[in-house]
Amino acid sequence: MKKVILSFAVLALTLTACNDKKQDTQAPAATEEHAGHDHGDHTTAAAAEKVTTVKESNLLQSSLDAYFLVKKALQEDNSTEATTAGKTLVTNLKAVVTEDAAAKELVKELIETATKLESTDIKVQRSEFEDLTEDLVKLINIVGTDRVVFEQYCPMFDNGEGGKWLSDVEELSNPLYGSSMLKCGANQNKIAFEAK
Image 1 (cartoon, one colour):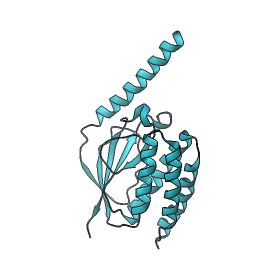
Image 2: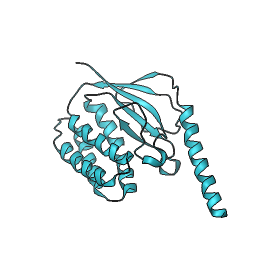
Image 3: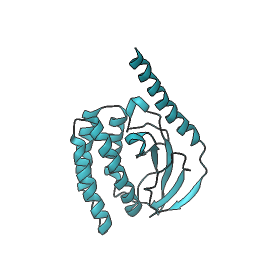
């Protein structure tokens, strides 16, 4: 009985911590940031939402479509659909053609990481998805995007190290935890494109 009570207490504290972090970031101050900035420092979930402007490009259109299918599958706790969408993502990334050396290297790394989404273990898929997001953000900063995307962050992921993902909608649906903490997180960055 003591173990059951202790388990509920730990769960309650975890959910409370996530909700506290979310409330801290509900009304972020708007700041502007330019493409090329390093987004790797996410030491606090209370960071203000930023706006990054990149060039308009449809180079990643089908890759982003597949990425968001992976995200949807993970937020719905569906490892089978995540595997299927991951295969589509690999195919679409292989079709990306760019002359930029840094972008070529990122595409290569993205393909390697996306291939690991074929795992049937949803924890592995979520970890690889988070790694994938890091490189995808860098690639978008180089080659641009055809849509507004939101960089979202969960402070609880990876034992408190935190993790991020991209979303095509501002509303939070956490793919790193799925139904167990679907609304945990905050918008940290809005990536918009400059119309040609």
